[in-house]
Image 1 (cartoon, rainbow, N blue to C red):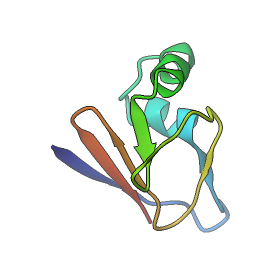
Image 2: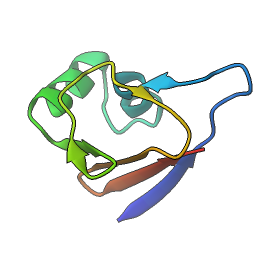
Image 3: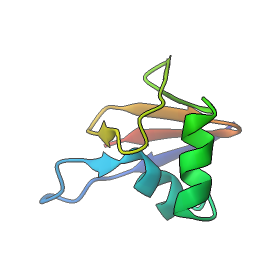
Image 4: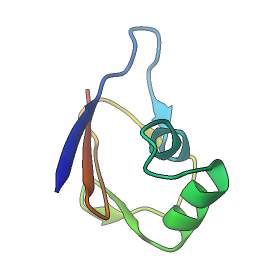
Length: 72
């Protein structure tokens, strides 16, 4: 599994789940990210997440396919 870390900027309290998947090029487009999330292919902190714009904050842990991402 490919483990990655995503560091929030000082003035950034959260990042939306769909934006994270796009930014890290796990999803090719916003539409692809939406489909991945709606198809229950993404977990946040061990729970299947279906909210496209779920706000991710420090210490959240996202897993999808061969990727795992820790938010810091």
